[in-house]
Image (cartoon, rainbow, N blue to C red):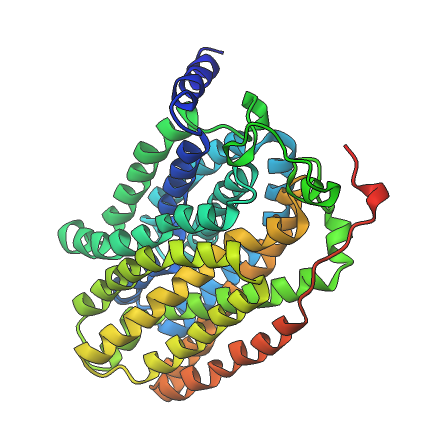
Length: 430
């Protein structure tokens, strides 16, 4: 009760000066950043040290990573339902505690089985659940400004890309890869526990406010009011009955699959093509800086332009990233790839948070997004495997990268059939 009073007092004080949703946005952005230990750009730095220490090849590591990610994805719809039932704050608290424990335990991995279990825990709590709860809370606090808000919140991912790989590389050099994971776990708790306890609120309505900081809802037409309001939303069953769900899922799954593959093997590919691990690790911050400048622009584009057009642009940059990775041979081509990949990450991450509430509303967004994110994480589980096989059996990535670039082009054609799903008026009720 005392902590709840402190939270409510903070809301009252802040909201007298500016909309409290911007505090929520910053808190959720911190959550996206804190998911870094469960993201592929952090794992990328650890592949070499883990492989050398445990004597495990690239195919075995990527297969364990993929299988663990796949199993972890199955639990995300359940997390989404819990968020709908109990609110994002309570679930995020449990997720943050679990992610920290998972990081610490991962540092004690003696072999492939423990490694796979560790991958599963970190992916489920970091890349899956922590991102889901962060996106969920911003979806409730912003509606008409959601594209811009998502772009700003997901700068946390770009900052993670800028900080976690070089930080992890430094920790590995100072204390070894095992102790590095202990420090990553502790830092997750230090950052997120105060935020969840004192700043996070599930929705604006829970503290007497409205999304976007509006004073009242404009009743221009009932359809617009319903689609932006807390009472509008497709149930999971209703969403699954629309073609929109599957087109959005296909696009996000493709992005997740191929971006994960590039993140996971960036250091290994750069090393194989003659660059040092340090240069490879520092390309992550370059991509992140590009994403920082690009992401707010992407958010504005989503608020202004037709959504299918922005999705197609995202898939186009993904295709370009794969092709540019295939020609990396020196510092210039590495930087060229990093810039393109940064733009691509800005598109992908903003769309990840934007699309589900955009098409299916807020009321049941936890279960809808949880199921959609499960599909995306399944894609992420598959993504690294082709490149792992290419390295172990062909000793080359180029042909596989070029072949994978065909996939986003095909999905881009599919997105041209994306349309607004319809919910019968009689079902839009409180």
